[in-house]
Amino acid sequence: MTKLCGDSPRKARKGRGAVSNPNNRYDSRRREDFDDGWGTLDEPLPPLRTTVSVDAARTIINYNQSPDIPFDRSVNPYRGCEHGCIYCYARPSHAFLGLSPGLDFESRLFQKANAAELLTVELAKPAYRCRPIALGVNTDAWQPIERHLKVTRGILGVLDRCRHPVYTLSKSSLIERDADLLLRLAERNLASVAISVTTLDHGLARRLEPRACAPARRIETIRRLADSGIAIGVLVAPIIPALTDAELESILTSAREAGARWASYVMLRLPLEVGDLFQAWLEEHAPHKAAHVMSIIREMRGGRDNDSRFGRRMRGSGPYADLIERRFQLACKHYGLARRPDELDCTQFQTQTVGTQLALFT
Image (cartoon, rainbow, N blue to C red):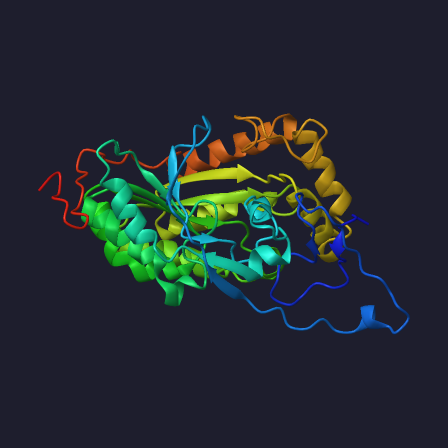
């Protein structure tokens, strides 16, 4: 069994993705459960409640120079994600907070309450040059706590007022709440919206991504946003070998019938702590497939659990990766799906007044 130091994987908790809460890679100490003879390890685990703290952020736009993603800047309203997707590549980022990428990542969340104000200030800087911002690409901007915190909606309001282009990605039907702002942006060619779908199997989805929107509801969200006039796409992600790969064409079919105009996909990635967490999940929820799944992953990743090289980390390499790529190309051609969204317009950008400072443009 995969060894995870810290809270041992005794039993999966209802509504949670990770089966343990291992130490993060920066911890100087290691903890392990110890049976003291009183049978405490066999006792039911108490409910794991979600807590939300304020992230005292001083900046809000994150910049990157990655050559294999279509944006160079992003904004993330939250740290951690209550969706609890076991495969989430963002889990290791919780280690920077001194927390575990396991259960801590999905239960100890942080909101950037001043995100809209910070974004207004950063967009007003004389040196700022407009390029599309990717919203919520590390953790979902429309995760459950957004329903009452509305940090994401505040960010969209700033982008709308500044006429700033934005890429959005979510697996939550809550995005429909903000259809008014997204439509206003989309009508000016300032917004690209995508819904992420991993599987259409309801039972599998409940185990893979326990607090995310059900697959059928995500397809309905594509339909509702498309019907409202928003150009929308589908991201098949992640494709998990021997677990969800057979559904590639059916997901694309369902999304296209619902109104999706373009599609993309990402192969499963297992960076840092995600590798052990995912293998522990396999042993708990799919023990008969665990070895097969991992053997294909390693075949795609040069014999390792993960290959972080640009150009390969998203798609993998080798015969299996080539087969998935070919299937995806043929399906997109058959269903009339574009391989990428339309380019967004950066020429409409205008800054807003900050405090007593006059707007640079009117």
